[in-house]
Length: 286
Image (cartoon, rainbow, N blue to C red; front, side, top):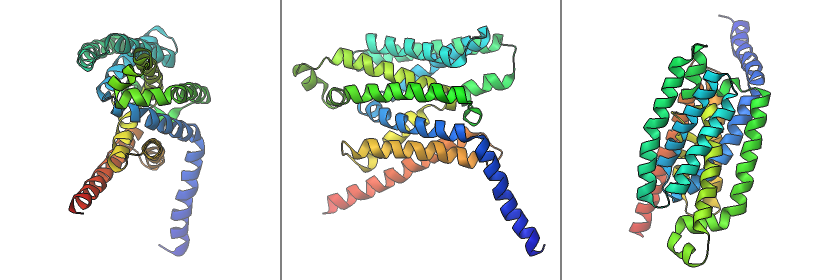
């Protein structure tokens, strides 16, 4: 092999990668938006000990999307309807943690069973069925990106509006209630916002892997910081790195995008956990 062959292999591959990247730029933007909003809302998910709720909502979102696929409706709309119903039920009936976990435990198998039933009745492309479970971020169309951006903007604005009372209620619910914070309405509002972002996350990354962007980045950030500003910023950063990094790696290989996203997210969490443990040891030694 001469130098011309080497140069052609290197720069030809780079040019091909650039062409593929241009074709999936909507996916990159979708991953970045979802990483930011998922990381921010994930902080409150962790503070309110609601990681289990994310999975419960995703199962009903999966059922709604599967029903829409079967009936020929818009899949994103079906996903949103399923998520909002699940979030509303959890927020309305699950005021206490014990009640909430019981409700989620009931909704999860019900939603998963319905979704499997609808998919078994669907006679269309098998890729459409598979994408509901593992996502289809590498095939995001302009219209889908627009829906994602609009819903993410609604969730972000909603979070900013209730940020202070939500944070107070998340860290000290008893004191928040005593100070007159409408904790019931705050909880319900947060659950509806969570339902919306879970719905679009399910469409992008799939029902089985949604926690990789709505839980893991925030969990990692809370391992290395406790600041009220640093934790959300780190969580958003970790979410973007996981989503965008996963897409950039996926288009260079032959594997689906989801394993890359989940692996990057998990590695970030492990590194943050090690850094946090080392910092704690140094603090105790001092």
